[in-house]
Amino acid sequence: MAEKTKKTDISKLNFEQAINKLTGIVAEIENGRIPLEDSLLQYEQGMELIKHCRGILQHAEKRIEKISAESESEAEQE
Image (cartoon, rainbow, N blue to C red; front, side, top):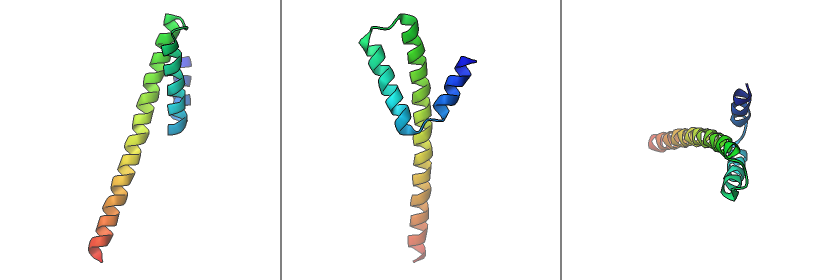
């Protein structure tokens, strides 16, 4: 149940929020002052954040491609 809650929370984050959360996780892990089990949980959450960020970037890339294609089409018609 907690796992599903984490994923739901991550899916609601915008790109900047997800990157900030990911940066915090990396700092915590690199600090080395958290127990191994917590490090593994943080790593797992970090991977979910990376996946979420990639999805946001892919969506943005598709929007850019669509806008570019529309602009080219309009330019050709003129």
